[in-house]
Length: 169
Image (cartoon, rainbow, N blue to C red; front, side):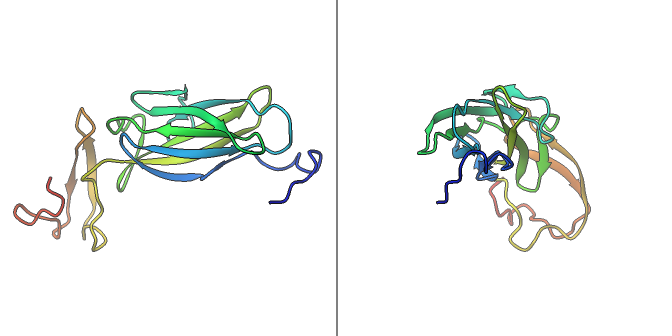
C-alpha cells in the first residue's frame, strides 16, 4: 500500500470497491468507498436507478438498503448493500440477462466528489442457458407483481419445454 501526501492525491478520483457487483435478492454485498486524502470522509449514500438518477438516500425496501458499517485503516467508509426481497419494477431497474441493474452512489459531504458502483440484482431460478441462450430474438419482458417471475415473447426454437425445464419454473 502506497500512501501519498494529501496534496499529491488531490487529482485522484473517489471510487467504490468493488465497482461491479452481483447480489441475489435478500443478500448483502460489502463495499469500500475510497476517498483520496485525509480528514473527514463523510458521505451521503444513495441507491439509484440504472442511470444514476431517481436516487433514494439510504435506499428503501424496493431498491435495497445502503448503510455505513464502519471505517478502514485510512478512514474510508465501509458500506453494506442489502438487496430487496424481490426484483424492482423495470421502471426502476434496467432489465439485464439474469435480473436487473441499479447504481449505488456515494457523495462526499461538502464537495462535488461522488462515486458510483453498479449492482446487478438476481433472483433464484433466473438463469442463463448453459448453451448461450436461445437461437432467436426475445422481446416484451414483463415482471410479475412480486418480482419473482419474468415472462417474455421469443422467436427462439431451442428454449426448454415442459418436461425439459432446466430451472424448475
